[in-house]
Image (cartoon, rainbow, N blue to C red; front, side):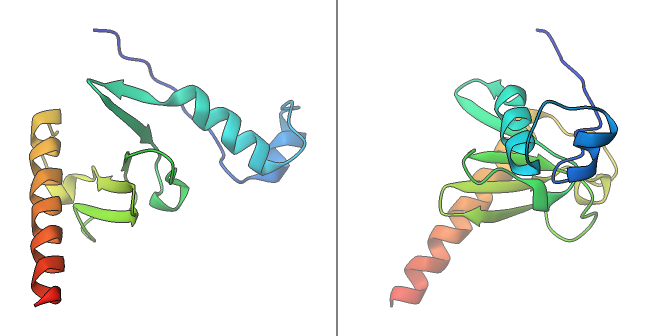
Length: 121
């Protein structure tokens, strides 16, 4: 399996367009272009990786982020998208396997579904 690494997206940083002569008219255009080129596919999952949760892509089912430390492990971005916090605080200071992430997402979705069913009663 190949792993690809990159950095310094500078999402929503308009001035980086000027500083580095990036070929974009707006920060939004830059964000969309970069995000569309960096999706990770794992099995049937599309995953967007960002440092900050606020840069998560609402059009991708799973977003992996850092920056939020102990705040949560999994949370909903919108009805079609989740954010998974990969900070070490959320995972007992260990690196995490995809299978563990998948299990945590499944638990989150199960608890979410149970909560919705309970609210209907």
